Length: 357
Image (cartoon, rainbow, N blue to C red):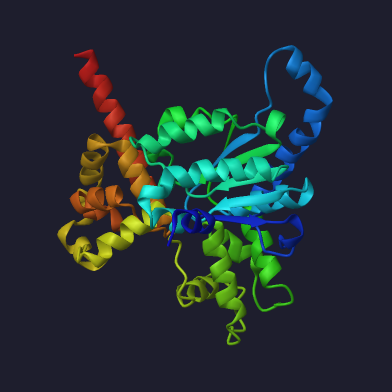
């Protein structure tokens, strides 16, 4: 395959009328896109003022969010509403021919300018130019020479690994829009959209139980439930919904701490059962043991207890801490918190006394 064929396969140009307006998308990301669209519309009215003061709007945006964030919702909204043709890099095709990466980037920017008005989308920016590679300098140069002001090209990139990018590259973008995990409204809207007319499922409770999940994980859960016709009659109870989630086969893989917990579980690590722990740590010694844990790290002890109380997966760091202080799994949520606060008061009192001496 020749160079021209390789470069052609590295790009995909999509006309605005081909963008699906019915695609299920993340509400909070669409709201960010709506805000940015208002900035684009405002640009024409202040363009002369910007020129007079020697500054530019730029139109370069870096979207940052955890794995499972629906970055495509931002791209689709801008493409439809402006409207704009979308030119996107086919990252997998580019990386399959490493010697053509720089040429593909240059071709992409040139094609975007020839296709203007246009939106050039760089998905998984860290894959295209990880920190420390010469490609970063090339991309910075292309970004600095490409603006909405003079080229009618918006450059929008996305990443879930900002730590893999050089700061100089991140600083080239005019705007950095950061998203957390899917909000409650994101989850409710996605579940309602997929599960509409399913009166056997309490969407509001389901959304509460998926706190911390990514949008993509929530969407997968909704589809799994939609395909399940055997929902129990008492599915409005929290216990039934939790069982429904467990049996769906969907997991919050967008959460780093869940993946850490998964790795620990599959590596064969085991912790003692509550019954065994209660035999090893009688009730009268628990206060002293809690004081020991708080003495090592109150913040770690608090975090582990809060994670246990909320039935969320433990991170690798939490699992390591729990391995040192396994008695933390004992008791009810209220008992754990009570002992934590009691140990904190005792530890603070000891510090004050030692300070006076």
